[in-house]
Image (cartoon, rainbow, N blue to C red; front, side, top):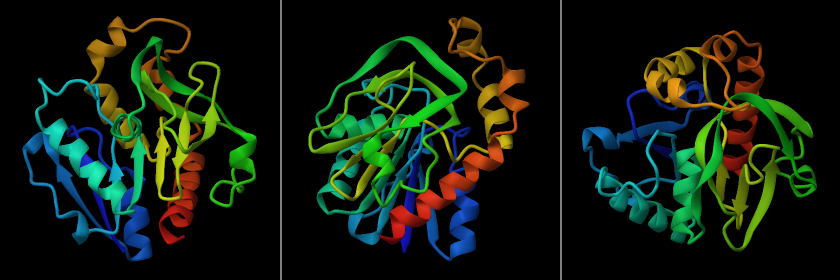
Length: 231
């Protein structure tokens, strides 16, 4: 299977998705949109992964490539490619499917509990997941669930944490793919955001880095990738 990822900034790459692809013999290539690299022909790929980033889906004037990216995502969905969006990636999918993406009352940055809905617990893609577990969040906007989608995860800070559109499009607001090294890079490039952010849903860099949750989250990411891209 040929999987392609879209990267929006240098410090939010594929994380452990890269090692998973290497171990399972998948061809994983990417487009670095911040480097003005060209998007591939949708027919030249079998699956798409859209990574996170600090920009908003509404920032097309600041980042003109967002418009082309949305068109590309739309084409991949229309052609029934497997499409996975993470954080900003999920918001881009939601926007592409005509659902709203809006600012949150306060940002959610850090390791906080996630709850999978009963729908997810009984779905073959997700029925191996624990009912609740701690995942990494880093977002100040939230998506509405697109029409014809299943609402599959939530928590106290953000009611819409994940959705499945039809059978081939998955949006996750959180970061199961993040490695310790990747998070350190993200933190180093987000000092101003962390200084200006406030509220009960913001953790310090020390709290985020010195945690036991990386291995568990990466394991769950690999299981989810295996089920999503092989079914």
